[in-house]
Length: 454
Figure 1: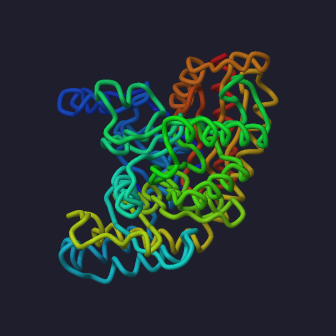
Figure 2: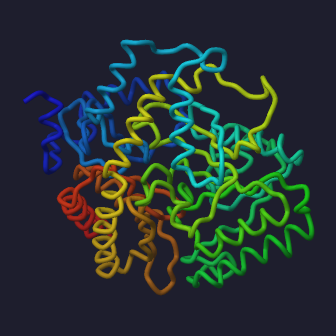
Figure 3: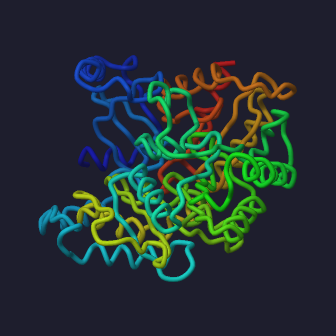
């Protein structure tokens, strides 16, 4: 077998050397010398040399089961052969020709496909970008241009990117804003509808209560004091909050936001950068919410199976700006667009359903561990976008980030790749090709890591 097929055929991780090994450590040392220290890497030091399917190998020959997918990016698995073949074919035809100045078939083809699948009413237009942050910047600009308004509403715990406009929306961690002075845009933040921790009591509540209380905060506090609704260009929502802890919003809440936007002429901007492309067991997280439609949507991460691509899709009557108003030299790169078209084909061909089915199997296993351990306060999410919240105990429900980090490290040392998020959660965002057999292996390692860490 070739090295890639041998890696893909694995059933269990194998750790051959103390981590990180000597070859990996040399790369880490070089990185610390030549690469920006701003990257928010976890405490464990994974160095990737090869990856195929759900398996990763480091330079020292250690193999890992990947349940993070490059932070929810490699939706079809690492180096899916059909994606690789499509990319290779396109590379041999042409790599770049700047779609903001010239034409090629890939942009209208993907734009048409996105119109078919995105939960937006009527005709759409798409701006192609290189990342999620760029897609968000586009959404902000088009909302301001269309409404002739300047204010936005975002949520505590949200993450929308690190460019200055997107950073104005972002509020998931202090470190993301520290040192950058005033926010660039006029953004007010309101509580996110967390069932597990009500913003006023820090204790669990129900969907109806948290929906009522957050909507009341917006309509009867924010709109009546600092932020008149007739001056708001957009409300920006992660339907499942990502960096904030993998927290789904209640359907009643999403519907209420749609009502408010319709009432006041506000754009409902849905950030599906992390939750989109089959991650939640439907093509988009918004698809779980009884026909609610967005005005503007932002995609990236899983859209290109690892190729750098972002997209901002809006109603055609909203994306009505003038020639030259917004563009990107590399946005809409034909290689990235080719990867996206093949990714959607694979998602519609069975991977969205696999996300739903195997994700439910993973969630059931995680709930068994929640029942087993007093340190697991909550298991939540949709499909293969699941969060496990660690607490001091089930009585106080106080967040235990230190324990979360210990478990994350213990999993790494046993060959399981997971990643933290939120106050004290671990996110499960595996490639959507994950099997139930893979889940059994992952849960066994996770169980062992918890037992050794408490």
